[in-house]
Amino acid sequence: MIENELQTSSPFLYPVALSVLGRSCVVVGGGAVGARKASALVDAGASVFIVSPELSAEARELVSLGVRHVAKPFEPAFLDGAFLVIAATDVETVNAAIARAARERNVLCNLAAPGDDGHTATGDFATMATVRRGDLIFAVTTGGAGPALSAYLRRELSARYGAEWGDTVLLLGTVRDAAKAALPGDAERTAALRSLAGKAETIAALIKSGDLNAARQEAWACLTL
Image 1 (cartoon, rainbow, N blue to C red):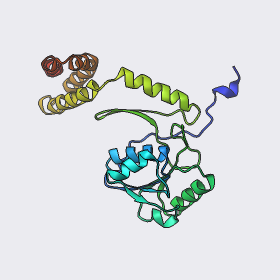
Image 2 (spheres, helix red, strand yellow):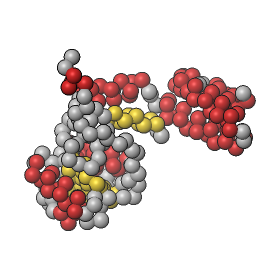
Image 3 (cartoon, helix red, strand yellow):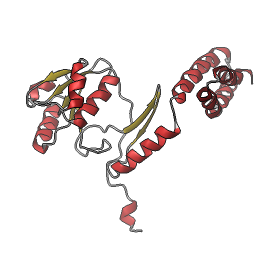
Image 4 (cartoon, rainbow, N blue to C red):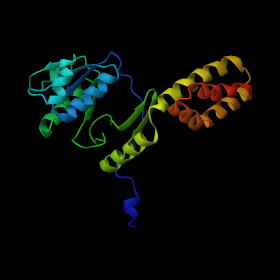
């Protein structure tokens, strides 16, 4: 094994969960990549508009559902008042112009590329390969080194953690809130919550099987330790 192959090839990325609720977010590019990015922003509650002279079928569907569309080539003024922009065109000079305009306006910028896992060396942030089950979110990135690996890990996570995990998180959150109120002692509360977390697999399996009462009993039993 060559030593250099074991060294990271990119700067460390600081992982965050970014709130875009009600924020103005611009996606430049109406192809499949732009549509996918726009759809994710819509799901997160952003106020989205797509800038592109032409739209793919996926992007047209988003517009039909209420996403705003500017049928023009990119202009820097389109970023005025925006919170973030995703450059999803296949023209390098256009993407560079978007990044430059974003920097001038202190707008967060992501440079997307077809098939990537969200990493960009010149943008401000990376979007990651994600699996979402309600409030439970798994996010994977290889820093751009292995998009296929990111996709593989996303599929593995998706298969491993089904929809029942979204309900599991909701139930555990309810019990956690009750534990904070019912167990004033730090040590006692910590022990109960650790026990609760340790039963997550069992609770998820019960929910998946449809035995919701047993799942609830298993979760609430942690308060009687």
